[in-house]
Image (cartoon, rainbow, N blue to C red):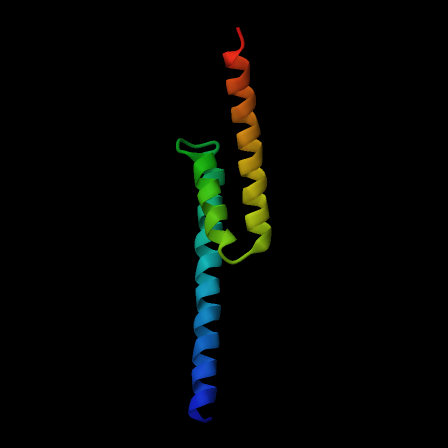
Length: 86
């Protein structure tokens, strides 16, 4: 192996290791948030945080997070629009 090949191998290995760490941390946070839905704690916020971590590497997590934000905005808008009516 020459120096170029070693550098390429090292960079590829680091990228894969980073991705594995993100997957483990992200899914752990999502699982903890899911448990917090029935246990004391901020379950929904924790799930959103886990999706944000997973969203750094996966498009499906970004899309799910965007859908969640859109629905949360719809709920917020409908709540505040109803409360402002006389």
